Length: 267
Image (cartoon, rainbow, N blue to C red):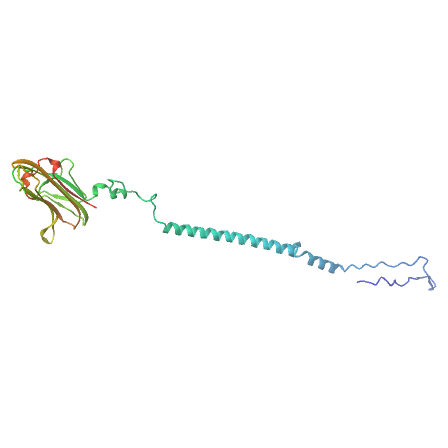
């Protein structure tokens, strides 16, 4: 409660034994009056000013905003990292191989070696001329196990007729070289060198390459003369095709093994 300090309290009189009032000999004094609110109101107002757990509401709001700012920054950084990872993954998927990370082909190195395969499995063959002394076949016979001759990758050499049989369809490079020695060469001397294939289901042979040589002798008759012919090209072969070499004058073939050869390999 509050009181008006402009009004003094009533005077206090002392009463003696006979009941007559006597004025007090002490001077009157005013009872002090304070304007403080009651205790309950002071406690309530103090609680309102301090906030929750003694923390000011303004300070709590500032701290909350700082936390929100920190979490927003962390979320933005995570989003940027995710975008960078996505772009890097797309670049790796779309960027073609450059010359620094692609396998390099070298001269004389088979492609099968680049894939870890044995080069002996490559379909290929190289045979050299057989020296004939009694029977001379127009379709030449060859040596497949002499010197540098070899057969690999499923190619078969047919001893009976001198053919090379392929067991895989594909594009093959076929080549043949013959050397002839004419002991009595004349301006009319000539010969034909050809490569042909026999194919299952196709009765007549198919000519793949052919060379006709003439006019290679000198003007002086009855002189020996050496000449040669080379054939080579890329040809598509089917499985089980048999490739042969023909010479019109096999009796004139050179007796040097490495002068006459025949081969093929898959490209």
